[in-house]
Image (cartoon, rainbow, N blue to C red; front, side, top):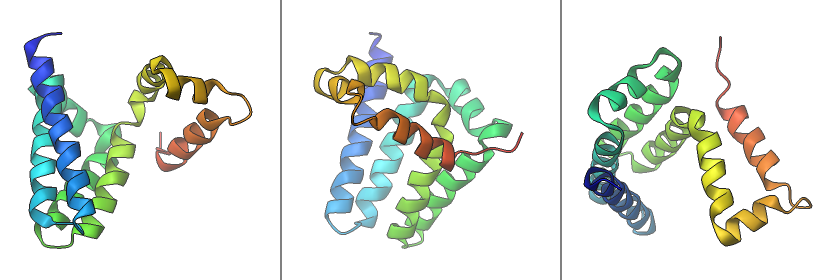
Length: 139
């Protein structure tokens, strides 16, 4: 793995950690903002600046981009609960195109992969249906 990818993944990890810590500490605004900055910087370093810009400005991703950036705005104007909910929705819509890659990765993780492949639970179909419901896009 290239050192740039390691740095990007590390920043994304820090962003998720700070966001989780902020939620545990009753939506601490400073930690949420720090988590967002780390997460956005990590995505930009991992994907590259041009690819990140294309991801956020692509016509079919406007809904997710606007939702995510509106969530960041809500966090900065002291509405952290609303901001985090809008951000989560924006992330689901924005990164829904990565579901096949995420699914392949999850199948490789020992315990999670076994649970997803268990036919009685059929978690994958329910999760795919939920993601498709959130990300319905007009053609």
